[in-house]
Length: 193
Image (tube, rainbow, N blue to C red; front, side, top):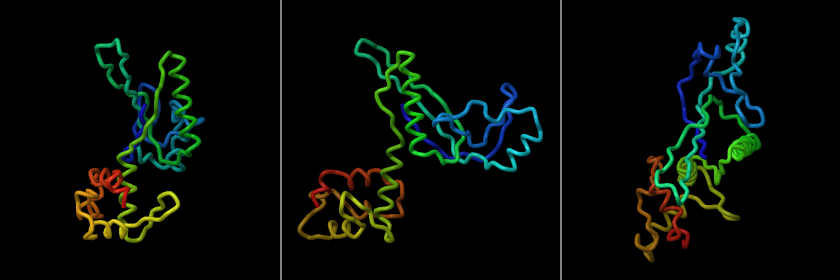
């Protein structure tokens, strides 16, 4: 399974089939969104929600990608498990509880979850952008690294691009979504320096 959040336009919409209001951050119970939490026939209750709650700024999505067995000739299609509005205030404990809940619910249905993932591309580009910031240092193990280390590697005449694989464009902080640069910065070739 995978989990990811994406920015959304903040707005509230009424769903007449469930008599619920969608677009508020969904409260969690042990990490799991409470189904149809914003259901009411009361205008006063709706007013309280609008007055006391922000609108959700993110949509959190859980997808499942079935893995075919060795005897299957057709690859199963991925499917949406859940999607709900959030304000990104879930704790690490709530996320672990949610994964545990999903794992157990699937196990009861004879579905074996072999792993959970989040958006690793986002995490590694965030790490790269922090590393390339002139105002920040990044701790790697028990040592600090900064963009200055990368400048030293690239400009060191004892080594060439063939040794470390880096170019000046890899350490350009203006290109914030340069994933290929992330691959180079985390490659074993670069680790030796």
